Image 1 (cartoon, rainbow, N blue to C red):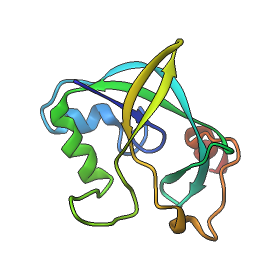
Image 2 (image 1 turned 180 degrees about the vertical axis):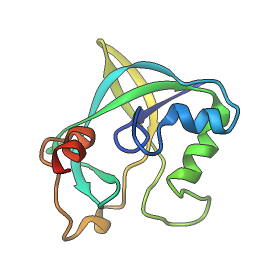
Image 3 (image 1 turned 60 degrees about the vertical axis):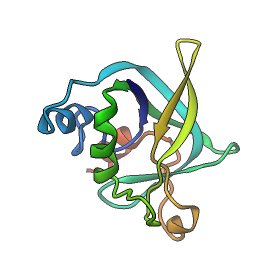
Image 4 (image 1 turned 180 degrees about the horizontal axis):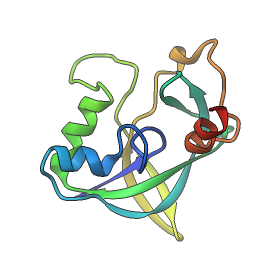
Length: 134
């Protein structure tokens, strides 16, 4: 089992809902551990957000799930992360805190140079931002 921090379209109810991604691949339903945040800057790419880690940034809101290890390649495919290729998203490790407990998670930030000229989501919450802009 692994943990993943999701902050954008992989969140529940979003277009790439992590639970639906697992179901489509006939994998166990991810277990929601709780809400967490990562320090950074969140940007609007139109249909999805991109997080640039930045210790001076805002608290970017997301959810932590415990997942079956076999779901990681599915998430990599959704985020277009392929071995040996530099893409927009990268798979990295981050430690987050849920109810005071430190949890090491994978997550998918974007390349810093990819956000030039894009609107920043000052609240750090993709779901609230997306709902408000409709």
